[in-house]
Structure formats: structure tokens, C-alpha cells
Length: 306
Ligand SMILES: NC(=O)c1ccc[n+]([C@@H]2O[C@H](COP(=O)([O-])OP(=O)(O)OC[C@H]3O[C@@H](n4cnc5c(N)ncnc54)[C@H](OP(=O)(O)O)[C@@H]3O)[C@@H](O)[C@H]2O)c1
Image 1 (cartoon, rainbow, N blue to C red):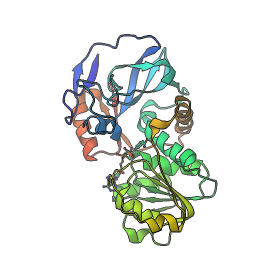
Image 2: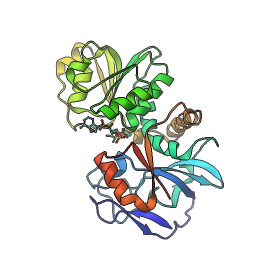
Image 3: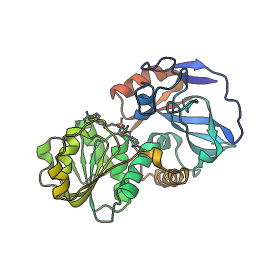
Image 4: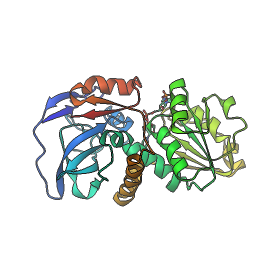
């Protein structure tokens, strides 16, 4: 079968012929329809993630959409985090209990583009962030997480959604995703905004500026460090308004929580109420696609199709 193969950490994968996965107890072989290239895939393949350095060669791809016995499924893998191969191949070996069966009318490529980015947005808003109807949410960045968060905040009953992104393209995406107010990441742009919940995949200076908008008791959920690994926040900002700063990772979800979140995302995607910008690229072109995704030189999430 054809697969993307990482042979050297820090270098993009190349398309290669691989033997099909051998069937294991409690596992199934999924016929892959679509696999996104996500920041987690890119990070793990550098060998510098907090999961450690994966053994090479390996097939990357921490999630995908495929079929099992003719039925559509979403599936996760631990490629790049622990030993084993991932979704960027014609077939993938998946633990039976991790499969999530999807409604028949879910578009596979669109669902692959959403995947765990949308799960993170949904769970960070509703579970960790405890979003209540009518509240104001401020969303930083407008990649896959940001676009999902804008739409999911609305679906969860947010009263107002403010989106902040550094690029003109990001701000256009935020407006299309339905944000009520769209601003840049300049600190002056946050002045006058009052928010209850900050959904933060960026950290760094943008998050420090956005935290100033939080009302007393406001919640700040960090789920990534796309802008910076550190953040210049002052103690007085946190304690003067009793702010709650929490971290979020999809890896803390139980399989049941993750499956429920995937189902929520899938049902919204099936009725056209949730989507993120994406590009479709053939698996054979993975090397260039991987480079472009790492450089941010794409029209959104790249989804590989075999
Ligand atoms: N905790 C979790 O479970 C979880 C799950 C999924 C993702 N994440 C993390 O969340 C972050 C976003 O993921 P994603 O899927 O949305 O990624 P993505 O689709 O690649 O989007 C990244 C976004 O970050 C913005 N960005 C990148 N560098 C920036 C900088 N220096 N300053 C300001 N904005 C910057 C980009 O803005 P422009 O488009 O304007 O360039 C882009 O919109 C990543 O760090 C990812 O690892 C965490």
C-alpha cells in the first residue's frame, strides 16, 4: 500500500510503498479516505514534542476518516506520540474501541479537516471553559481551532463572539465563520471589549492582551502556543479579577468523551453548520504538502486523500 513515511525527524515524509498492517487482537484495519496534516503531526515529527522522540521510520497522522465494513468512521492513532503508524496511508491499524462511527451523510474530507481541532475547540469551550448561554467569548487565531471555536461557541449559545487574528486572511476567515466582531492582535484593539471566556490557542503577547478583556471571574483556556511558549501576564491581572487560567489537551479526554465530541462535530458538519477552510492533496504529494502546512502557506488545513 502507499503511505507517507518519515525516515528522519525534522524532515517531511515522503510517499513510499509499505506492507499492509497485520491484523492484531482488538484492532481493525481501516480503509483510509482522508487524513489531515495537523500542528500535532508536524510537532511530533520534529522529535521535540513533550511526548519525546518517535522511532523512525513511521507513518504519521494522529487521526483520519475511513471505512470499516463499508461504514464511515473517524479514528485516532498515537503516531509520533508512542510507537506505531498513523493515518497517512491507504490503510491504518486502529484499536476497535477507538473507532467512532459517523452518520452516513458526513462529508469525509470536511470532517477530516475538522477532526480533533474541532474537538479541542468544543471541549475547551464547553467542558473546560464552562461556556454559559449569553456569554461573550473571545477567540484568538483563526486556523482550524479558531474557525471551529467561533462556530461552536455560537452553537453552544454564546451571546457574542469576538475573534482576533494577526493576518487579513485570518480575519476574513473569522468573519465568514460568523464572528460578531473581528479585530487584529494589536493590544489597542482589545480595549473596550468585555468577555467572559478567552479561547486561546496562541499564548504569548496576544493572550496577555486578550486577558485584559476578561470580566471578574472570567475564564481563560489555553490549548496551544502558536504565538509563543511563554506569556507576559502579570499577577495583578490574574488576581485583581480572580481570573481562572486553565490548560486543555485532547489527550486528557476519555475515549467516551472524545467519541461524544466527534459525534457533536460530525452532526454539525453533516448539516453544513460547521466547516473549516481546507485543501485536498493526494497522498503522493505529501512532501510538498507537509512543507506548505508547516510554513502556513496553504488555504487552510491540508487533507490528504490516498
Ligand atoms: N490542546 C489541544 O488538544 C489542541 C488541539 C488542537 C490544536 N491545538 C493547538 O492549537 C493551536 C492552533 O491549532 P490549529 O489547528 O488551529 O492550527 P492552524 O490551523 O495551523 O492555525 C494556526 C493559527 O495560528 C495563527 N498563528 C500562528 N503563528 C502565530 C503567531 N506567531 N502569532 C499569531 N498567530 C499565529 C495562524 O494565524 P494566520 O492564519 O493569521 O497566519 C493560524 O490561524 C496549535 O498550537 C495546536 O497545536 C491544541
